[in-house]
Image (cartoon, rainbow, N blue to C red; front, top):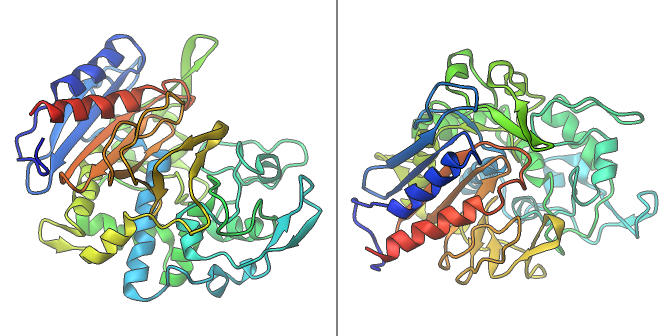
Length: 410
């Protein structure tokens, strides 16, 4: 296969893989988007916006992208780094003073702590090495007790729990009072780090986080349907989020009465909705080293830094939830990067699997993913919706593996 690809790319096995998932009833519908720099974006959609919906999926269908938000937040931070407003290894306490005197748990008791060995930096936030936790993962019970449950899903506080914060400032104030799981820069822990990074961007830029992304990224790139809440004009195009309980499908989020119409705060770690059309523009910009349709949003060297391995020297591997390690994978600006050819392990969080070195990107827990290959200047985007996140663990690796087999046949 050549290092670069021409504009005419057919992915028949990849299309057939998506079609099989829809025909088998695994998902109600989904869409693929792919392309190369300078070539057209190709779309292939299958199925409907929900099991009980008549509307077909297309490139303007709106999806909850959850953690696929993280690369966008990471690029927002890289913009401020390029501007000289913040620095990669700058302590975030210089921007958010509440994080000046962080403490680390000694053992399992959050009341037994010691001073952190070093300050949390912007790099630590970008790479999930700040020592933070997240509900359902490291320090999950402690975070849930304090109402720190990332995302926009509705939540009713349990006995002894605080309600969910209603602003990034309130979120940051709560997290700053909680102990860290480890010293900053010593371990990868999937966490609320990118939500805190949204607050850093908000304070450092002097404008609300969502306004910053809109002005600096979404408007210049023509990402007209990407944001932290659903507009009334988008409801008819908004996919359902089906949930499987006891073998039956129900709705985790109804598009007609969505939690995304009333988000708690703009969650940089997982709060965006987007479309295939919009996210394809973001991916193409990154592959074209910061420029799209004559509009430059980042310098090439900044993009190359963003998609490089930014993990602190002491962190040699990426551990995902349920104890799975991604071998040969580093982490850049809110997204993974393959350091060597990645092999599939068969785990639930087996992303991306079977891709060459240099491929970067990140998925979302409700069935979305985008992977970008700078050597071939090629991207593949996949959008679907299902819940819980572990339900269809093989789907995204199957699709990316099929895509590379299609490319090898060229």
